[in-house]
Length: 104
Image (cartoon, rainbow, N blue to C red):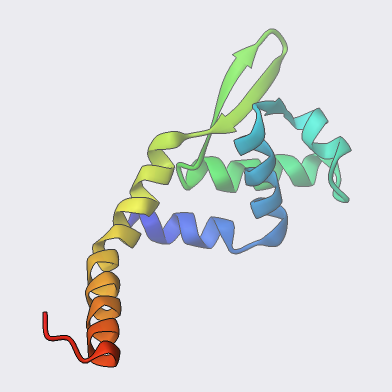
C-alpha cells in the first residue's frame, strides 16, 4: 500500500513542513535546515523517510543533492483519495436533494 507509507511519512509535522518547502521549490539539505528548527542530520533523516515513501526524489548537482517533490508519489495519494470522492459527492448530492425536496 504505497499510500499508507505516504500518509505515515506526512504524519510528522516537520516532514510535512519539509515536503511543503520542497513543493514550493527544489532545495538542498542545507537550505532546508536553515529554515527549520532541527539539525541538518535530522533534515536528512526526514528526507530519507519522504524518499522511501516515494514523495521526494534527489538529483545530484555537483557535491550536493537537490531534493524535490516526486509528482508520481502525489498521484498515488490522490488516486487513493479519489476512490472515495465519488461516494462523497453522491452523498452530498443526496443530502441537498433531501433538503430541497427534489427527487433526482
